[in-house]
Image (cartoon, rainbow, N blue to C red; front, side, top):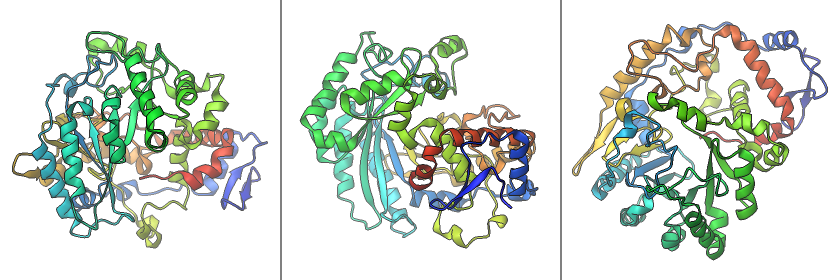
Amino acid sequence: MISEEFFYDNETKYFILKPQNELNRNKKEDYLKSVGFYKEQDKRKKLSGRFTEDHIKDSLANALQVVFEVTESCNLECKYCGYGELYSGKNSKREKTNLPLVYAINFLNYINKFLNQNLNRSLNKSITISFYGGEPLLNIEFIKSVVDYVNKIKNDNFNPRFAMTTNALLLKKHIAFLAENNFRLLVSLDGNKNNNSYRVYPNGKDAFNEIIENIDFAYHNYPDFFRKSVDFNSVIHNRNSVSEAFKYINDKYKKNTNLSELNTTGVNEDKKYEFWEKYKNINEDLNQSEDYRFIRDKLSVEMPVIGQVSKFIHIYTNNVYQKYIDFFEVSSNNTYLPTGTCIPFSRKIFITSKGKILPCERISDEFSTMGYISESDVFIDYERIINSMNGIYDKLLDNYCNHCFYADKCMQCIFNLDLSKDKLVCHGYEHESKSTQIISNYLNTLKKERKFYKKILKEVFYA
Protein backbone atom coordinates (compact mmCIF):
# COMPACT_ATOMS: atom_id res chain seq x y z
CA MET A 1 0.00 0.00 0.00
CA ILE A 2 1.61 3.25 -1.13
CA SER A 3 1.79 6.18 1.28
CA GLU A 4 -1.17 8.55 1.07
CA GLU A 5 1.31 11.42 0.68
CA PHE A 6 2.07 10.27 -2.89
CA PHE A 7 0.07 9.91 -6.10
CA TYR A 8 0.75 7.78 -9.17
CA ASP A 9 1.58 9.78 -12.30
CA ASN A 10 0.37 7.88 -15.37
CA GLU A 11 2.65 9.70 -17.79
CA THR A 12 5.96 9.19 -15.98
CA LYS A 13 4.94 5.92 -14.24
CA TYR A 14 6.36 7.20 -10.95
CA PHE A 15 4.93 8.01 -7.55
CA ILE A 16 5.19 11.75 -6.90
CA LEU A 17 4.86 13.79 -3.72
CA LYS A 18 1.50 15.52 -3.47
CA PRO A 19 2.34 19.23 -3.72
CA GLN A 20 -0.19 20.32 -1.10
CA ASN A 21 1.22 18.15 1.67
CA GLU A 22 4.21 18.84 3.88
CA LEU A 23 5.72 15.52 4.93
CA ASN A 24 7.27 15.35 8.35
CA ARG A 25 10.45 13.40 8.80
CA ASN A 26 8.86 10.40 10.53
CA LYS A 27 6.37 9.88 7.71
CA LYS A 28 9.15 10.13 5.16
CA GLU A 29 11.25 7.62 7.03
CA ASP A 30 8.33 5.18 7.37
CA TYR A 31 7.60 5.44 3.67
CA LEU A 32 11.24 5.04 2.64
CA LYS A 33 11.56 1.96 4.83
CA SER A 34 8.41 0.48 3.26
CA VAL A 35 9.89 0.72 -0.25
CA GLY A 36 13.29 -0.64 0.71
CA PHE A 37 15.48 2.45 0.96
CA TYR A 38 16.96 1.09 4.19
CA LYS A 39 17.17 -2.55 3.24
CA GLU A 40 20.21 -4.11 4.90
CA GLN A 41 22.88 -5.13 2.42
CA ASP A 42 26.28 -6.71 2.69
CA LYS A 43 28.32 -3.69 1.66
CA ARG A 44 31.59 -5.55 1.69
CA LYS A 45 30.22 -7.91 -0.94
CA LYS A 46 28.52 -5.14 -2.89
CA LEU A 47 31.70 -3.04 -2.98
CA SER A 48 33.96 -5.95 -3.83
CA GLY A 49 34.53 -4.86 -7.42
CA ARG A 50 38.15 -4.35 -8.41
CA PHE A 51 39.75 -2.37 -11.20
CA THR A 52 41.20 -4.46 -14.05
CA GLU A 53 43.03 -4.08 -17.35
CA ASP A 54 39.76 -4.78 -19.17
CA HIS A 55 38.29 -1.60 -17.65
CA ILE A 56 41.09 0.45 -19.20
CA LYS A 57 40.91 -1.16 -22.65
CA ASP A 58 37.12 -0.87 -22.74
CA SER A 59 37.34 2.82 -21.81
CA LEU A 60 39.96 3.53 -24.48
CA ALA A 61 37.80 1.87 -27.12
CA ASN A 62 34.71 3.80 -26.03
CA ALA A 63 36.27 7.14 -25.06
CA LEU A 64 33.86 10.01 -25.52
CA GLN A 65 36.50 12.73 -25.70
CA VAL A 66 40.22 13.21 -26.30
CA VAL A 67 41.45 16.55 -24.95
CA PHE A 68 44.76 17.95 -26.18
CA GLU A 69 46.40 20.62 -24.03
CA VAL A 70 47.57 22.54 -27.09
CA THR A 71 49.70 25.01 -25.16
CA GLU A 72 50.40 26.21 -21.64
CA SER A 73 50.69 29.78 -22.95
CA CYS A 74 47.82 32.21 -22.43
CA ASN A 75 47.20 35.81 -23.51
CA LEU A 76 45.30 36.42 -20.24
CA GLU A 77 46.29 36.04 -16.61
CA CYS A 78 42.95 35.59 -14.85
CA LYS A 79 43.11 36.24 -11.12
CA TYR A 80 41.29 33.01 -10.23
CA CYS A 81 42.95 30.79 -12.85
CA GLY A 82 43.47 27.18 -11.78
CA TYR A 83 47.10 27.53 -12.91
CA GLY A 84 47.62 30.81 -11.06
CA GLU A 85 48.95 31.89 -7.68
CA LEU A 86 45.81 30.84 -5.77
CA TYR A 87 46.71 27.20 -6.31
CA SER A 88 49.68 24.99 -5.52
CA GLY A 89 50.98 21.65 -6.84
CA LYS A 90 50.60 21.16 -10.58
CA ASN A 91 49.64 24.77 -11.03
CA SER A 92 53.12 26.13 -10.26
CA LYS A 93 54.79 24.17 -13.07
CA ARG A 94 53.58 26.06 -16.16
CA GLU A 95 56.42 26.55 -18.64
CA LYS A 96 54.48 27.82 -21.70
CA THR A 97 55.11 24.49 -23.42
CA ASN A 98 53.40 23.59 -26.71
CA LEU A 99 52.25 20.03 -27.35
CA PRO A 100 54.32 18.55 -30.21
CA LEU A 101 52.18 17.59 -33.21
CA VAL A 102 53.80 14.16 -33.45
CA TYR A 103 52.55 13.35 -29.93
CA ALA A 104 48.95 14.04 -30.95
CA ILE A 105 49.27 12.01 -34.15
CA ASN A 106 50.84 9.08 -32.28
CA PHE A 107 47.98 9.07 -29.80
CA LEU A 108 45.28 9.30 -32.50
CA ASN A 109 46.86 6.28 -34.22
CA TYR A 110 46.96 4.46 -30.87
CA ILE A 111 43.24 5.08 -30.23
CA ASN A 112 42.42 4.11 -33.81
CA LYS A 113 43.84 0.63 -33.18
CA PHE A 114 41.36 0.11 -30.34
CA LEU A 115 38.51 1.32 -32.54
CA ASN A 116 39.51 -1.14 -35.25
CA GLN A 117 38.95 -3.99 -32.79
CA ASN A 118 35.20 -3.27 -32.93
CA LEU A 119 35.03 -2.74 -29.17
CA ASN A 120 33.19 0.59 -29.53
CA ARG A 121 29.57 0.05 -28.48
CA SER A 122 28.22 3.57 -28.98
CA LEU A 123 25.41 4.06 -31.45
CA ASN A 124 27.03 6.66 -33.71
CA LYS A 125 30.70 5.93 -32.85
CA SER A 126 31.25 9.63 -32.14
CA ILE A 127 34.33 10.94 -30.36
CA THR A 128 35.05 14.58 -29.59
CA ILE A 129 38.55 15.90 -30.26
CA SER A 130 38.93 18.89 -27.95
CA PHE A 131 41.58 21.61 -27.75
CA TYR A 132 42.47 23.14 -24.40
CA GLY A 133 45.02 25.54 -22.93
CA GLY A 134 46.26 28.05 -21.92
CA GLU A 135 44.57 29.66 -24.87
CA PRO A 136 44.49 27.02 -27.62
CA LEU A 137 44.18 29.53 -30.46
CA LEU A 138 47.73 30.71 -29.68
CA ASN A 139 48.83 27.45 -31.33
CA ILE A 140 46.42 27.46 -34.27
CA GLU A 141 48.81 25.67 -36.64
CA PHE A 142 48.79 22.64 -34.32
CA ILE A 143 44.98 22.67 -34.30
CA LYS A 144 44.76 22.93 -38.10
CA SER A 145 47.20 20.04 -38.53
CA VAL A 146 45.30 17.79 -36.12
CA VAL A 147 41.95 18.59 -37.79
CA ASP A 148 43.45 17.81 -41.20
CA TYR A 149 44.90 14.51 -39.93
CA VAL A 150 41.68 13.45 -38.19
CA ASN A 151 39.61 14.15 -41.31
CA LYS A 152 41.82 11.74 -43.26
CA ILE A 153 41.29 8.81 -40.87
CA LYS A 154 39.15 6.19 -42.57
CA ASN A 155 37.43 4.07 -39.95
CA ASP A 156 33.74 3.19 -39.68
CA ASN A 157 34.13 3.18 -35.89
CA PHE A 158 35.54 6.71 -35.81
CA ASN A 159 33.12 9.62 -36.10
CA PRO A 160 35.05 12.72 -34.96
CA ARG A 161 33.74 16.07 -33.76
CA PHE A 162 35.80 19.09 -32.75
CA ALA A 163 35.50 21.31 -29.68
CA MET A 164 37.45 24.08 -27.97
CA THR A 165 37.46 26.18 -24.82
CA THR A 166 38.56 29.75 -25.56
CA ASN A 167 38.80 33.21 -23.99
CA ALA A 168 37.69 34.62 -27.40
CA LEU A 169 40.57 37.11 -27.82
CA LEU A 170 41.59 35.48 -31.13
CA LEU A 171 38.11 34.49 -32.21
CA LYS A 172 37.78 37.15 -34.92
CA LYS A 173 41.05 36.05 -36.50
CA HIS A 174 40.18 32.34 -36.68
CA ILE A 175 36.38 32.18 -36.76
CA ALA A 176 36.28 31.19 -40.47
CA PHE A 177 38.35 28.06 -39.84
CA LEU A 178 36.34 27.12 -36.74
CA ALA A 179 33.01 27.54 -38.50
CA GLU A 180 34.18 25.65 -41.59
CA ASN A 181 35.12 22.66 -39.44
CA ASN A 182 31.97 22.85 -37.32
CA PHE A 183 33.75 23.35 -34.00
CA ARG A 184 31.78 23.46 -30.77
CA LEU A 185 33.05 26.48 -28.83
CA LEU A 186 32.85 27.18 -25.12
CA VAL A 187 33.59 30.87 -24.53
CA SER A 188 34.61 32.07 -21.06
CA LEU A 189 32.71 35.22 -20.05
CA ASP A 190 31.65 36.17 -16.52
CA GLY A 191 29.13 38.89 -17.40
CA ASN A 192 29.51 42.65 -17.87
CA LYS A 193 32.73 44.66 -17.58
CA ASN A 194 32.80 44.67 -13.78
CA ASN A 195 31.68 41.02 -13.57
CA ASN A 196 34.51 40.06 -15.94
CA SER A 197 37.20 42.17 -14.28
CA TYR A 198 39.22 39.22 -12.94
CA ARG A 199 39.97 38.31 -16.58
CA VAL A 200 42.94 40.55 -17.36
CA TYR A 201 46.07 40.72 -19.51
CA PRO A 202 49.43 39.72 -17.92
CA ASN A 203 50.16 43.45 -17.40
CA GLY A 204 46.93 43.79 -15.40
CA LYS A 205 44.99 45.66 -18.09
CA ASP A 206 41.30 44.82 -18.35
CA ALA A 207 40.55 42.64 -21.40
CA PHE A 208 36.76 43.04 -21.50
CA ASN A 209 36.46 45.39 -24.49
CA GLU A 210 38.64 43.21 -26.74
CA ILE A 211 36.83 40.05 -25.64
CA ILE A 212 33.43 41.54 -26.47
CA GLU A 213 34.70 42.90 -29.81
CA ASN A 214 35.71 39.38 -30.85
CA ILE A 215 32.50 37.75 -29.64
CA ASP A 216 30.39 40.42 -31.36
CA PHE A 217 32.22 39.81 -34.64
CA ALA A 218 31.33 36.10 -34.52
CA TYR A 219 27.76 36.89 -33.43
CA HIS A 220 27.07 39.31 -36.30
CA ASN A 221 29.11 37.70 -39.12
CA TYR A 222 28.50 33.99 -38.43
CA PRO A 223 24.96 33.99 -36.99
CA ASP A 224 24.05 30.39 -37.85
CA PHE A 225 27.32 29.01 -36.48
CA PHE A 226 27.01 31.18 -33.38
CA ARG A 227 23.46 30.04 -32.71
CA LYS A 228 24.21 26.32 -33.13
CA SER A 229 27.78 25.96 -31.93
CA VAL A 230 28.80 28.69 -29.46
CA ASP A 231 28.17 28.27 -25.74
CA PHE A 232 29.26 30.29 -22.74
CA ASN A 233 30.72 29.49 -19.35
CA SER A 234 30.61 31.93 -16.44
CA VAL A 235 32.72 31.52 -13.30
CA ILE A 236 30.75 32.82 -10.32
CA HIS A 237 32.74 34.85 -7.79
CA ASN A 238 32.53 37.92 -5.56
CA ARG A 239 32.47 40.39 -8.49
CA ASN A 240 29.44 38.91 -10.18
CA SER A 241 26.34 36.86 -9.44
CA VAL A 242 24.41 34.14 -11.22
CA SER A 243 21.76 36.72 -12.08
CA GLU A 244 24.20 39.30 -13.50
CA ALA A 245 26.19 36.81 -15.58
CA PHE A 246 23.11 35.02 -16.85
CA LYS A 247 21.15 38.16 -17.77
CA TYR A 248 24.09 39.88 -19.51
CA ILE A 249 24.77 36.93 -21.81
CA ASN A 250 21.10 36.14 -22.34
CA ASP A 251 20.21 39.76 -23.20
CA LYS A 252 23.22 40.39 -25.44
CA TYR A 253 23.64 37.05 -27.24
CA LYS A 254 20.30 35.25 -26.66
CA LYS A 255 22.22 32.41 -24.98
CA ASN A 256 22.11 30.71 -21.61
CA THR A 257 25.42 30.29 -19.84
CA ASN A 258 26.96 27.36 -18.04
CA LEU A 259 27.78 28.16 -14.43
CA SER A 260 30.90 27.07 -12.56
CA GLU A 261 32.47 27.74 -9.19
CA LEU A 262 36.10 28.31 -8.30
CA ASN A 263 37.89 25.00 -7.81
CA THR A 264 38.22 24.36 -4.07
CA THR A 265 40.88 21.65 -4.51
CA GLY A 266 44.59 22.42 -4.25
CA VAL A 267 44.28 25.95 -2.87
CA ASN A 268 47.62 27.41 -1.80
CA GLU A 269 47.79 27.62 2.01
CA ASP A 270 49.17 31.15 1.80
CA LYS A 271 46.29 32.24 -0.44
CA LYS A 272 43.31 30.68 1.34
CA TYR A 273 41.99 33.95 2.72
CA GLU A 274 42.17 35.57 -0.71
CA PHE A 275 40.57 32.52 -2.29
CA TRP A 276 37.57 32.44 0.06
CA GLU A 277 37.07 36.16 -0.46
CA LYS A 278 36.60 35.44 -4.17
CA TYR A 279 34.61 32.20 -3.79
CA LYS A 280 30.83 32.13 -4.15
CA ASN A 281 28.45 29.16 -3.97
CA ILE A 282 26.22 29.01 -7.05
CA ASN A 283 23.14 27.50 -5.42
CA GLU A 284 23.20 29.89 -2.47
CA ASP A 285 23.64 32.88 -4.77
CA LEU A 286 20.84 31.75 -7.08
CA ASN A 287 18.44 31.14 -4.19
CA GLN A 288 18.93 34.74 -3.03
CA SER A 289 18.34 36.21 -6.48
CA GLU A 290 15.22 38.20 -7.32
CA ASP A 291 15.45 36.64 -10.78
CA TYR A 292 15.39 33.08 -9.43
CA ARG A 293 12.24 32.02 -11.29
CA PHE A 294 13.32 33.66 -14.56
CA ILE A 295 16.73 31.98 -14.49
CA ARG A 296 15.22 28.68 -13.34
CA ASP A 297 12.78 28.64 -16.25
CA LYS A 298 15.47 29.58 -18.76
CA LEU A 299 18.05 27.06 -17.52
CA SER A 300 15.45 24.37 -16.87
CA VAL A 301 17.22 21.02 -16.32
CA GLU A 302 20.62 22.74 -16.63
CA MET A 303 20.15 24.42 -13.25
CA PRO A 304 22.73 23.26 -10.67
CA VAL A 305 20.06 22.23 -8.15
CA ILE A 306 18.21 20.28 -10.86
CA GLY A 307 21.46 18.52 -11.68
CA GLN A 308 21.70 17.34 -8.08
CA VAL A 309 18.08 16.18 -8.09
CA SER A 310 18.66 14.41 -11.39
CA LYS A 311 21.49 12.44 -9.81
CA PHE A 312 19.19 11.53 -6.93
CA ILE A 313 16.53 10.20 -9.34
CA HIS A 314 19.18 8.46 -11.38
CA ILE A 315 20.40 6.66 -8.27
CA TYR A 316 17.12 5.76 -6.60
CA THR A 317 14.70 4.80 -9.37
CA ASN A 318 14.64 1.30 -10.76
CA ASN A 319 14.10 2.53 -14.32
CA VAL A 320 17.56 3.93 -15.05
CA TYR A 321 20.05 1.82 -17.00
CA GLN A 322 23.59 2.74 -17.92
CA LYS A 323 23.86 0.24 -20.77
CA TYR A 324 21.52 -2.10 -22.64
CA ILE A 325 22.92 -5.23 -21.04
CA ASP A 326 21.72 -3.95 -17.65
CA PHE A 327 18.16 -4.88 -18.67
CA PHE A 328 19.15 -8.54 -18.35
CA GLU A 329 21.25 -8.37 -15.20
CA VAL A 330 19.97 -9.03 -11.68
CA SER A 331 20.70 -5.82 -9.80
CA SER A 332 20.98 -7.50 -6.40
CA ASN A 333 24.00 -9.44 -7.66
CA ASN A 334 25.83 -6.38 -8.94
CA THR A 335 29.15 -5.40 -7.44
CA TYR A 336 30.55 -1.89 -7.59
CA LEU A 337 33.93 -0.26 -7.71
CA PRO A 338 34.29 1.76 -4.49
CA THR A 339 34.12 5.58 -4.62
CA GLY A 340 32.59 7.74 -7.32
CA THR A 341 35.80 7.99 -9.35
CA CYS A 342 35.29 7.71 -13.11
CA ILE A 343 36.87 4.64 -14.62
CA PRO A 344 39.98 6.21 -16.17
CA PHE A 345 39.40 7.31 -19.78
CA SER A 346 35.69 6.38 -19.73
CA ARG A 347 34.65 10.04 -20.10
CA LYS A 348 37.75 11.70 -21.47
CA ILE A 349 41.44 11.27 -22.10
CA PHE A 350 43.55 14.31 -21.31
CA ILE A 351 46.93 14.76 -23.00
CA THR A 352 49.09 17.43 -21.34
CA SER A 353 51.38 19.72 -23.31
CA LYS A 354 54.30 17.58 -22.09
CA GLY A 355 52.73 14.37 -23.37
CA LYS A 356 51.46 12.97 -20.07
CA ILE A 357 48.23 10.94 -20.26
CA LEU A 358 45.67 11.79 -17.56
CA PRO A 359 42.00 10.82 -17.07
CA CYS A 360 40.91 14.46 -16.66
CA GLU A 361 42.16 18.06 -16.88
CA ARG A 362 40.70 18.97 -13.48
CA ILE A 363 43.11 16.97 -11.36
CA SER A 364 46.81 17.16 -10.54
CA ASP A 365 49.23 15.07 -12.56
CA GLU A 366 51.16 14.26 -9.38
CA PHE A 367 49.10 11.13 -8.68
CA SER A 368 46.97 10.74 -11.82
CA THR A 369 49.52 10.34 -14.65
CA MET A 370 48.64 7.04 -16.32
CA GLY A 371 51.01 7.02 -19.26
CA TYR A 372 52.99 9.17 -21.62
CA ILE A 373 53.59 9.87 -25.30
CA SER A 374 56.96 10.23 -26.98
CA GLU A 375 58.00 10.98 -30.54
CA SER A 376 57.90 7.29 -31.33
CA ASP A 377 55.49 5.58 -28.91
CA VAL A 378 52.45 5.69 -26.63
CA PHE A 379 52.81 3.94 -23.30
CA ILE A 380 49.98 3.35 -20.84
CA ASP A 381 51.13 1.74 -17.60
CA TYR A 382 48.31 -0.76 -17.05
CA GLU A 383 49.91 -2.46 -14.06
CA ARG A 384 50.65 0.81 -12.26
CA ILE A 385 47.10 2.11 -12.84
CA ILE A 386 45.51 -1.10 -11.56
CA ASN A 387 47.69 -1.34 -8.44
CA SER A 388 47.31 2.35 -7.65
CA MET A 389 43.52 2.45 -8.04
CA ASN A 390 42.91 -0.74 -6.08
CA GLY A 391 45.38 0.34 -3.40
CA ILE A 392 43.45 3.58 -2.85
CA TYR A 393 40.16 1.66 -2.76
CA ASP A 394 41.59 -0.60 -0.02
CA LYS A 395 42.59 2.43 2.08
CA LEU A 396 39.06 3.85 1.89
CA LEU A 397 36.90 0.73 2.21
CA ASP A 398 37.15 -0.09 5.92
CA ASN A 399 37.24 3.48 7.22
CA TYR A 400 34.62 4.99 4.93
CA CYS A 401 32.90 3.06 2.13
CA ASN A 402 31.61 0.14 4.22
CA HIS A 403 29.85 2.56 6.59
CA CYS A 404 28.78 5.26 4.12
CA PHE A 405 25.25 6.01 3.03
CA TYR A 406 26.58 7.04 -0.40
CA ALA A 407 28.72 3.92 -0.83
CA ASP A 408 27.05 2.56 -3.97
CA LYS A 409 26.01 6.02 -5.18
CA CYS A 410 29.23 7.88 -4.41
CA MET A 411 30.25 11.03 -6.31
CA GLN A 412 33.65 11.50 -4.62
CA CYS A 413 36.64 11.43 -6.99
CA ILE A 414 39.68 9.91 -5.29
CA PHE A 415 41.97 12.30 -7.16
CA ASN A 416 40.44 15.21 -5.28
CA LEU A 417 41.60 13.69 -1.99
CA ASP A 418 45.03 14.30 -0.50
CA LEU A 419 46.70 11.13 -1.78
CA SER A 420 50.06 12.09 -0.27
CA LYS A 421 48.84 10.99 3.16
CA ASP A 422 48.93 7.39 4.38
CA LYS A 423 45.54 7.80 6.02
CA LEU A 424 43.08 9.23 3.52
CA VAL A 425 40.21 11.53 4.48
CA CYS A 426 37.10 11.20 2.32
CA HIS A 427 35.21 14.49 1.85
CA GLY A 428 32.11 12.78 0.49
CA TYR A 429 31.59 10.46 3.46
CA GLU A 430 28.15 10.48 5.09
CA HIS A 431 27.40 7.99 7.85
CA GLU A 432 24.27 5.93 7.28
CA SER A 433 22.67 7.51 10.35
CA LYS A 434 22.23 10.69 8.27
CA SER A 435 20.42 8.92 5.44
CA THR A 436 16.91 9.99 6.42
CA GLN A 437 17.80 13.67 6.47
CA ILE A 438 19.74 13.43 3.20
CA ILE A 439 16.86 11.79 1.35
CA SER A 440 14.39 14.15 2.98
CA ASN A 441 16.34 17.11 1.60
CA TYR A 442 16.23 15.68 -1.90
CA LEU A 443 12.50 15.02 -1.69
CA ASN A 444 11.88 18.56 -0.51
CA THR A 445 13.88 19.88 -3.46
CA LEU A 446 11.88 17.68 -5.81
CA LYS A 447 8.68 19.08 -4.37
CA LYS A 448 9.92 22.65 -4.72
CA GLU A 449 10.95 22.05 -8.33
CA ARG A 450 8.15 19.61 -9.23
CA LYS A 451 7.48 21.34 -12.57
CA PHE A 452 10.82 19.91 -13.78
CA TYR A 453 10.20 16.38 -12.57
CA LYS A 454 8.94 15.08 -15.92
CA LYS A 455 11.61 17.02 -17.80
CA ILE A 456 14.31 15.39 -15.67
CA LEU A 457 12.97 11.92 -16.42
CA LYS A 458 12.65 12.57 -20.14
CA GLU A 459 15.58 14.85 -20.96
CA VAL A 460 18.48 14.32 -18.58
CA PHE A 461 21.15 12.01 -19.95
CA TYR A 462 24.27 10.83 -18.14
CA ALA A 463 27.25 10.05 -20.33
